Structure formats: structure tokens, C-alpha cells
Amino acid sequence: MAQIINKFKRRLYSDSSFQAQKRMNEDLEDLLLDPDMSAEESVQPSTEGEKNFMGLLTILEDETVLHKLANSVASIMLPQMRQEIRDSVQHTIKTLNKKIDFLESELKDRDIIIDDILDKLDESEQYSRREAVRINGITEMSSESTDKIVADIGAYMGIDMSINDINRSHRVGNPKDYDNATRPRPIIARFKGYSVKRDFMKNRKKMKDSKSDPILPPCMKNHSIYINDDLTNKRALIDSKCRKLYKDKKIIGNWSMDGIIFVKTQSGNVILIRTERDYMKLEESLSLKITIKKSHLQNKDQDLTEVKSTD
Image (cartoon, rainbow, N blue to C red; front, side):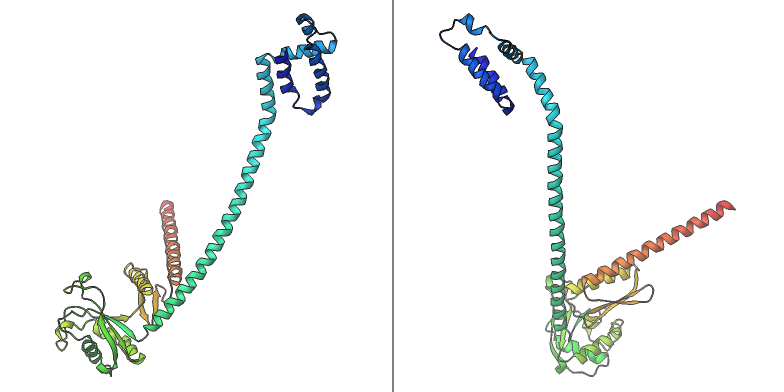
């Protein structure tokens, strides 16, 4: 009997609304467990309340009843708990999304600042190359003098200069990375004044078809000679991309001068490119124009098809 009472108390007394009943049952427990009472007397209820209490204990001893009671409580509590968990998770997700958006915005702003700094550094480096040109197509000879080669090129183009106008010249690149027979290493020449560099750039077209001229030395007769700005690595990559646009017939021309890359579009406009962002804008505008052109052609073909079907 004591075990039954304790089991019922653990289940029942957790709710404060049963405090009055608790006190009554404590009195009942003392009564039922009185050592002076016989076993028969201790289990015989003497009042209507005690009869009800003993009946409730009997019901709670039934595992089927307890299972149904647990299911009833779960059916009431679980939907509310699920909703609370769902609301909590959604709130957490919204908070995290806001933090992610903030961090992405911060990173984007920092990327812009970093790009600006890198562009300024590139501009400064390019300015340091203001008096320099890069010459491609000169076959490399043993015991050659690059200063003399550059001076000979200037004389051939009719430029008023001498070898003393050259500050420094030399080959660039690892010989292992170049094939002298098909692609000799380029020469970089830095002049003492900007005017000589400017004259080289203005007259450079004269060298493109010069390899057949008998007055040129042997080192200049194997390849077409090209004279270009000495661009930074960053701008040289952009220039390479622009040349590909020209090969793909997306533009009608490109060249460089004083570190600035010029692009002539199909409409005849000339665009100046100094940074990667400038090039990206050009590429986006070309892609947009191509898309519009394709759409226009498709509409035109559709109109022709409709006309044929009508006929």
C-alpha cells in the first residue's frame, strides 16, 4: 500500500493545485500505515473520500490508462512546442541572414577600397615606365648590343636620336621560355627623355613590314618587328584580352599609348581603358550589344517567316 501511495504522490503532487489534497492524503497515509492497525483495517477505506482516492490509485495503476493520458497530454503540448521551436529557428535564421548581409556589404566596400589602392599602385608603376618601350621580333645574336639595335631602329624610322639618348636597354625573360627561331626574347629600352619614346611610338608602324628591307641588319630580317608600350603586368593582361576581342571581331581595333589602352568599337567610338574595371565595363557593353543584335535578328527572321506563311 505504501508503494502505491508513493507512486501516486509522485505523479499527482507536481501540480500546486493539489496541495490541499496532498495534506489530506498525508493524514490518510499515517492512518493506513499505523502499526497498531491490522492489515485488513489498513486497506479498508472508512469514508467516501478515501474510497474515491483508492479508486483513483487503482485506475492509475493501469498502464493502458497511463499511456492514454500521456498521449492526450502530448497531443495538446506537442503542436505548441513545434510552433515555438519553428519560430525560434526562423528568428535565428533571420538574425544570421542580417549578419551575413552586413558582412557581405562590408567585404564589398573593402574590396572596392583595395581595388582603388591597387589601381593607384599600378598607375604609379606605369608612370615609372613612361620613357620605356618594348620591342618584339629582333632575333637574338651572340655578343649583341641592344643599345645599338635600338639606335638602328630609331635611325631606320627617321627619328633624330643617337645611342646616347638611351638610358638603358636589355632583353627580358628566361631564354628557356623562348624559341629564338620563332619567338625571340623582347627588348626593353628606356630613354633619357619622353620625346624619344613618343617618336618611337608615332613611327612604329614603319617596322611592321621592314624585314624584307636589305638595309636592315640580319637580326631584324627574320620576324616582323613590333614596338609597344612597356606595360605593367596588369595592363599587359588587359591588352591581351583586348587583342582577343579584336581577333573575335567584337571590336575593330586596339592599341596603347602612355600606358593607356585604346579600344575602337564597331560603332567607331574610342574607349580608354586603364583598369580591370574599365575592361569589365567594356565587355559588359559588348555582350549587351551582341544580345540586342541577336534579338533583333531573331525578330527579323520571325517577321520573314510570318510573311512567307501569309503568302
